[in-house]
Amino acid sequence: MAQLELKNICKGFDYPVIDNLSLELEKGEFFVIVGPSGIGKTTLLRCIAGLEKLDQGEIHIEGENITNLPPYKRDVAMTFESYALYPHMTVFQNIANPLVAMKKDESFIKERVTEISKLLKISNLLERKPHEISGGQKQRTALGRTLASEPKVFLLDEPISHLDAKIRAELRSQFHNLEALREVSTVYVTHDYAEALSLGDRIGVMGNGGLMQIGSAHEIYEKPNSLFVAQHLGQPGINSFEAELSSEGDSYFAVAGEFKLPIAEDHWKILNGKKISKCHLGIRPQYIQLGLSSEKSETETTVFQGNVDVFEALGSYGVMMVSIFGESFTLLTDPEDRYQHNDNVSLKFDPKTFHFFDINSGQNLI
Image (cartoon, rainbow, N blue to C red; front, side, top):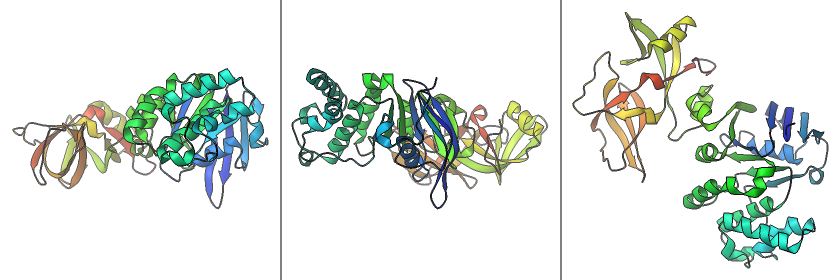
């Protein structure tokens, strides 16, 4: 039996936001929903929590239909991107509040708050009040209060979005060590693909009122079922451009203006079998390599020369944008590399890593 089940749920305001969405989560599963802002992620959590009334569909927790139950009877705990702490209480008291309400033993409360405060790196703040701590510390306190409760489902809405990069990375690595999360289903919403990839047992990419694709981080990243999914999972984003497909003897190409890129024979056979003559070609930045300066462009090779448009060194890696025959490509480089605008470089492509998307629907064709 699923711990949390959504059955064909719909919710709209002046326009459809959630449209016939279904989902099943097992006990202990950490499910991450990723997608751009304004796509309906928070609305979905609010529907599960009972803060928004469904237009259609059902919500079940451990087999019980809770669709029409008020929020306080649903046995869910939700934390919001914005925090709301009790100003007269200390950090310890704010985190402990749901446990006190449940009349838990004092020693249990102390143990639980200690565990959570260590995870969230606010152990040294337990005696302070909200006006004495920073915005990021307030957000961690609000998250701690949610994690301290004992619901059947956790709903976490961008819970670490306001924290600095170092703290976010540390918390991501610690989430799965929290005992409280092992006994419940967790739905975690973010627009940050790195959080989604590192946290989720499964990931759902949200768009067009539903979950466009559900799977493991590896499945969705390497085999996106649509151009929309490919564009919203990965940083830098996937390179994509319109191309016409053609063959010359035993060679096969994706052609965009003067740019003529060889494609793999097995891909050609699938596309030709579907009578596809035009598509969106997608290439992940990390699958484009810098070639040697001595390597020249040749019609039937995957090495092309281009000019640097932009180069940025970002600490652990560099990001470069290169133009080839009017098409712009983003790739990752060594952070020690240094390039100037208009430098001439060679790029190497690996045809086995290409994605082909329908020119109209955006669906993956391979």
